[in-house]
Image (cartoon, rainbow, N blue to C red):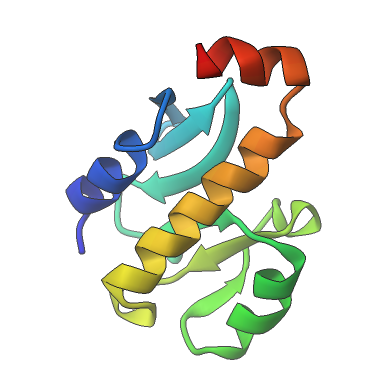
Length: 115
């Protein structure tokens, strides 16, 4: 899995936008709220995403996955590299992150995005 693969998965979801934040992080958002970020430069964290309380409690037990720096209080996880999780599961986790953030948007904003 590569950054291009992550971009493809995230941008395939409805109304997702992307922009660069903090100089070297590609952020994916729905309704101006981030649901995932990936580093454009090699570093300690390859990918971060919003997680449900259950996933946030379970996944850090695996090697290569930990609470995300600065965002753990909002239940974000950090994946250290592409080998920490398989592609099918990661696709599902990104969709779940998208859904969690979408559900927190105002009803008005959700209707606007739904068209």
